[in-house]
Amino acid sequence: MLPKKGKNTSQLGFYSTFEEQLSHQHPLYILANKIDWKMFEEAFKKHYSDEGRPAKPIRLMVGLLMLKHIRNLSDESVVEQWMENVYYQYFSGERSYACGVPCEASELVHFRNRIGEEGIELILKESIRVNGDDSNDPSVSVDTTVQEKNITFPTDDKLYKKIIKKCWSIAEEEDLPVRQRYTRTLKKLSFDQRFRNHPKNKAKARKADRRVKTIAGRLVREVERNLPAGSKYQVDIALFKKVLAQKRGDSGKIYSLHEPDVLVYLKGKGTQKV
Image (tube, rainbow, N blue to C red):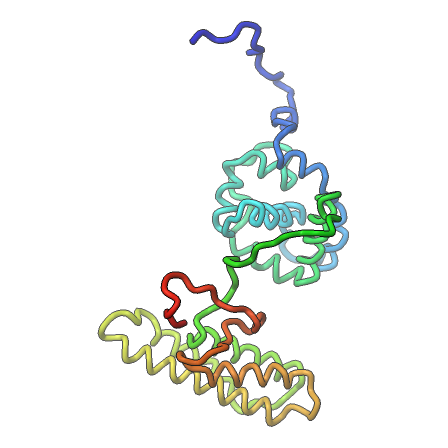
């Protein structure tokens, strides 16, 4: 097929800017010019110091977090795709093409920990504001039947390890005495739990699982004994005890400490147990 006549095939000027080379109808271009980036810089600058190694720009880190959730990517994927996508770079504040990765994927984890829940809520509020009239709709239908949750198997040692960390934080916040933290013991048990599917390691891994559960129970009982009456952590202690007592065949099991009311949607046969 012959090309259409009259098509503009002239090249951009030598001094054209990075912004002029992009399509102004691209969703990320439009969104980048709607977001109040200065608001994030003013809110998050309190988390930084004038001393030490210079940090990454706040707009870059906030932009990467937004892109991660907009495109449903992992930390590693959003960092890799940023280097290849010019709209990602413009969205996060670049004014010229950058050929390298913006940061290490682990820096996104450090940034999330630095801004905390308050910072994440601020990003969410700005995304709601940008949506305009759509965010003011009084009737919203959301189907969360198969929404992914940060849960784990109800009798898995991950829950027990989370209980141990929660007990440590409660003891530090309430200044409670703890006879033993089991830090070195837990590190050794983590090595024993590796390669658990190998025939020679199955027995060792199961024994380590039972040991982790025992340590979690000891710390829960010790924290419970030392907590003052009417403490706000009594509810958490009751939740920890319920998790430690649940078994595979029980009903109403706890799958997550931060969302204890979450239920599991089973795939396959209805008789399947979790």
